Image (cartoon, rainbow, N blue to C red; front, top):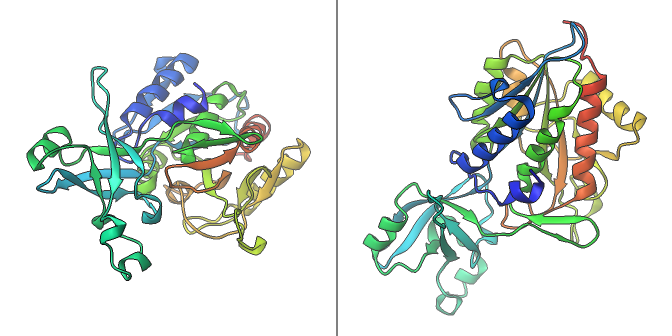
Length: 347
């Protein structure tokens, strides 16, 4: 399964079914169905035994879910009211095309567009502020409330209608690069010659509080965990270099700290040393912000040594994110170097 296929599958937080089905099948084909399961939260867990006796148990994870919207009601004239699922900047939403629903049986989702009060009707004060999501709507062409809710009932998932494309020199443009890049690399790593017993975990509901990883980490109790993520770059336009989080095209970003976890110092150092030894392009993430699955995994049971390896993404959590193909490969190369060369210390 390639990155394009993964990015174009819908899977907002809590409604990851299309992504989960595809990943479950891909894992079963590679490792055998008996080694793959779906837990009660909806995480896909694929297990592979290690070749080195006494090597640390490893959990390698990436989240399946993406940010999006969900229907909460409809107006009398047939416009859908929505709420955000995950962190979305409302500045990027107006006039964007969306797909509404995950219809079964080969039917197609509804086409929609995110709308707001026409600019001609806005006051000068209105035009100075960003319209919050509760003042936006999704137009699916319905004539009234009954038609709108018959086609898109409350709880219907909505995702951005953005095709995957390549542009520039080695760049990808897509929605959901956070974190389908991690899922893509996790699938590629299934054939790694792992040192320790390894669980490849495709987590759910990361964007709404890392809920899937919490249950998976308690069940698996790993000693070492690597989180494969997409992270904000903040390296475009007139942003001063001192405010860049990381840079697209300069390699995998290794994180020493964020708002959810602090990387285990020895593991962080070994990651950088591995990257240097194997000639893998890498950079240190320069901002302490956000959070990801490393937080709950680090704190599960008696704790796990954790480190986060991220692909830098521009315009993250928007309909159109951008990353570099070389950075995706660098994340894969560093994770593979760790799995095949590091025992994680004796138990």
